[in-house]
Length: 218
Image (tube, rainbow, N blue to C red):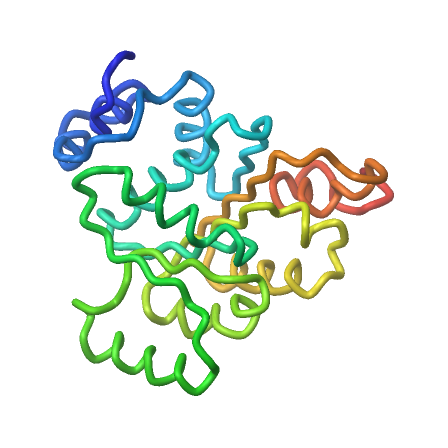
């Protein structure tokens, strides 16, 4: 593939022409690499997926292509990340031409968030397609956002919260995916496991609960 057109990227992973045509007006910042196309295909075909590329090899573009795709399917995306990454993510979204998505960084106070949800509920044209938020805000806001139509959760730098299945963010994500079998989860990180292999159990349990049902089995 040697095209920056989003439709061509989708065609390269087997999407039909009718689907691809909806994205013909969107231009990517660079030609996706084979591993990015493979990641896009994987995440579109599995309800729970993981993008564990080496650092600086472009997982952000895959997350953004997924968010654009689902926005055009009528579903909102929640992108969890450290607050220090918000501006970089916004900058990278703006490098994709023609997507027309509304983006919002959710960092308001609880009272302000309540008013914001009311505004989005009464005026869907103001509701964002993508919300960027921290782990802390996700834990308190995911249920309200779910009711607003956000059915996709991306957790970037997921190694920061999923070393244990008992962590609060792990418990919250489990609530999200159990809320509706159609809800989708993408975990992503390029950071190696810092201490011991057992730290990866929680991540693997989200992705393949049929294989590793307990930490002891892992």
